[in-house]
Length: 640
Image (cartoon, rainbow, N blue to C red; front, side, top):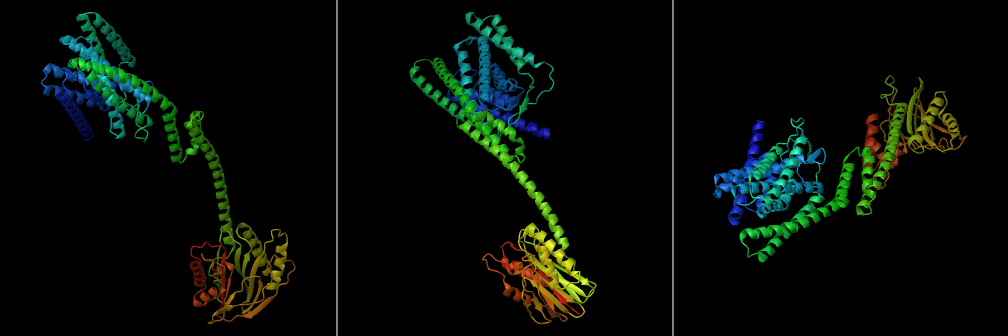
């Protein structure tokens, strides 16, 4: 099925090429009748380009269309049969030469994107025009119409060459611009005849052709000229069967038209304008001559002027390409690849080396290359530094995550906290502003009849506060388990924290010890926020007491404790200033009064629900404002 579709597409291509040639030849034959067999005109540019683009199918289509136009014009069978043979070669030779005349081991699909390819195209069209003019001259000489070496033969050659250059280049550039798919020949890996044999044949064709031309100039037509001509074109036929052995590269650039192609179009259009003006000028100068003499004069004048113009143009294009277009396109590709390649930094040395070729030029291109080279070098250093910083940041983040996990594990998080005890219940939560924080809470049984609750807030944030928090928490618990009173615990802990506290850190803390059997609750405050207490079904109110000085502030501070009696159903709510000092986008503080209000709005819900409700209200109040301080809450209910 796939082969059938492939054949179908090639037949359609053959028909389209035939139709294009037929229409062009018919129009030119009707309006500008000239020499029999091959009228002079722009249509001669089409067969070489169609063959170059579409290979044997384009060449066959051109030959069929050309023969059909000769048939319609009333030519004899031998004329249109000969026309088919000549036009097939005329279209097929450029295709074969493009893929066999190579200066390196690879070649590209036909495209005039460099001066090298343009020169190759011009050389191929010159060879093709010369071969076809010689073949026509050889045939016409045999028919007795005109000599092999004559002005008419020369006119055939320059007609084909001029129009192939003027229109062929534009057609080929346009085909590449619009992405027309061209025929790609298959590379022959193993050849029966060495390629050098075909090179020898090409040399023999040139030598015999030149020798036969010189011989025919000084002698009348004879058998030797015929033999030389027959040998020449037999060798041409053999050469067209040369296998293609070079690697063929596909089009890789995304640029539809290179700068060189744009300049070629400009120069070709200028050349066409010069040709038209030259033709108009010749119309007035040689108007008295007959038709053949007129065209001879026109073509000779046009060819002479265009040859000078195109040689100068190619030289100019070579200079532009070498100094401007190639450097700019190379730098453009470098920038594109550098930006689009996510691993481009690995190619940085190659990119810098590539820019080095142009950076030495004393021109705008050199300045551009030097600037990009410096940018690439600076960017390489920046990326390396960024990688180091990122790696360090990732390492720190990993360590912070470990520290966070350690800190979380230090705080009791298993609830219900004391499932075997029904005399009381405790629930707490800690939400640090950063990975780790300075707030902490604790609750633990000192013995079977005493339970302690603690909440504290270390000055500062982050790792330093977390480290100080670990020390403070450990000291408080250790002293509590020695059976000391809250005041004695804070007094001892304060003195120990003051030792070596060169950073002048401090802790605000609140601690209470519940005597489970009696409900006696003894507490001490070291500069911390006052708790809220709710007696049975009543509202929450502040549990006020004279606060002592913060821990780790001054040595030998004597702390004073207070006591209250708790009844079944009483609750004590502890918190840090991260709750009351939470702010919104208008810099308003959540505040003590708002906390008291929302606590009483849901005063009878469970301990866990109460802590979650307060956190939800704080988050709603803050809105889009980022959490600035650690938030810690603890609530205890006495049940006995």
